Structure formats: C-alpha cells, structure tokens
Length: 355
Image (cartoon, rainbow, N blue to C red):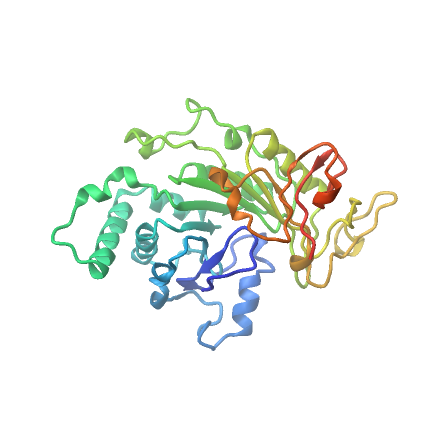
C-alpha cells in the first residue's frame, strides 16, 4: 500500500492482496513479481509472489480523508482464482464505503470479473459486507435497505479495466469487460507487444447494438463502450520494444472515437526527441532506412515521454496535477512557450513531460 505512487495514471495504490501467477505474454517481465521476489520473506511479501490475502489492509482507504484515485492491487490481480469470492466482496465493501475515492481495478482475469460482477449473489455479498463494515464503524439503530438499492450497482466510484498487450488478448478480454457492469471501463495496453485494432463495437457502440446483460433486463442502462485507453512500452531488464506506429494507431483510433487516450511511457526503448525512431534490431526490430534504435535510458519508465490526448474519463482533467507537466492539448502549430511538441510529426501536438 502507498498513499503516493509514481504510476502516472493513478495517485495511490492499495494492496489488500499481494502475489499472482502468469496468464499471458504481458506477464513475462512482471514488475510486481520482480519486487516481491526481491523482498521475499520480509513483512511486505512474506510469501514472495505467492498469492497472499492481507486483511489487515482492507480498511486503509477509510483513513485517507483526501479524495484520490486508487489503483487496487497493483501487486496482484483482484480476480485471481486463489482469492475467495467473499474476500473480493470485502474489498468492494470498502470501496462502497468510501465514495470520495475513485478506485481503478485492472485485471487479466476477465472471465471471473464478468461472472462475479454479473452475479446477484455476489452483489448481495457486497451489500452485506458494506452493512457489516458500516455498522462496525457507525452503529445504526436499524438497517436501511433503501440506502443500498440495486441501482447503486455498479459502484459509481469503481473503474474496471483489462490488460490488452496485443490483438489476441484485446479480442478476448475487451468483450468480457463490456459485458461487465461498471461505471467506467478502460484498457491498459502495457506492455504493448503488437498492433491493436479496436473494434467499432468497443469504442462507439449504439445502444441498440450492444450485448444484453442482466443489468439491461433490470432497467439499468450501461453505455457498453470503452471510456479510456492507456498505452505504455515495457521497461526493465529484457524489455520488449514498442513500435511507434502501434502507439500512433491507438491514439488515432481513440481520438476518432472521442475516447480519452493516455500514453504512459515509451519504456526502455522509444523515439529519440523530436524524431520517430524504432528499436535496436537486437531486441526485435530491423530499422527502416535512416532509422536506428534509441534507448530511452537505463530506467525508461522514469524518463520516458508522457502523452495525454483528451481528458480522463468523466472529464477528470484536474487529475493532471504536476507543475512539470504542460497542459496544452490541440492541433496545428504548438505554442513554443508551452513546451509541447509534435510527437509523431503529423500535426497533432500533445503534452510532453520533461524531467
């Protein structure tokens, strides 16, 4: 747990569980596994990267008075098969009791997420857990079920996302995400390992064309489309390169559909300043004429470019709170005094972070 984090698209992390197992190529160089194995046996990771419930951390967000965006289980996956349904309900109970916070849940276990969050039984577990926690903190003379009506589900302060490192996993995970009730749905294409074409059904789905979920039958309308696209390259030892064309394509698709787009980092390999270059052939790319690989730095995650196109979901523009971060977004010739430049050489200029 940390009430501060260097992850650019969030503000804090909350790990009520630590540990995970690999399920797809995006897990191959997992930063969480590296950290957990390094500190295995210590209080933070008593079982290394083995899945470990941390019930002593469940109430941590209750003590954070200032509203913040919280990445849930940055060192695990909330929908891992070794985490009991009842424990996940306890996590959701805490989130329900802290509407001042915004929770960001990112998973590679799309099927279990869809199954649980479409389940009436699970929703009742969350309601019961919310009532139990609230009664423990603030005893009430009688339980008021009207305060916990079904139309409070999905929780309005919980964003759900899936990892989509390549087209195969985008095709598998995104439809499951769209069939899951959520206030905000997002994808994290990090590490981006190949080009991804977003289906028109995922980013611009008319109400009469979307899949019918149990929540539709109950009269709870859900705009089944992606609300946010995050993209990032891989960093660290053995990092696999991201081609600038893959990032450019996702940006253009997002902008065309009016979906907020966030480029977190180039990672270990990326374009040199003001020039789009591709990666060293030794790590998988053969440069075109005049193009050569450029290592961002020994720690690409910290010094890579940060690009933001469009607002955060629900127009959370205020979340960009960094005096070093320029906040001009637009088209055409960028104002020189804003420190913004044309990243891809195509007339669209975006935010650039200088460290």
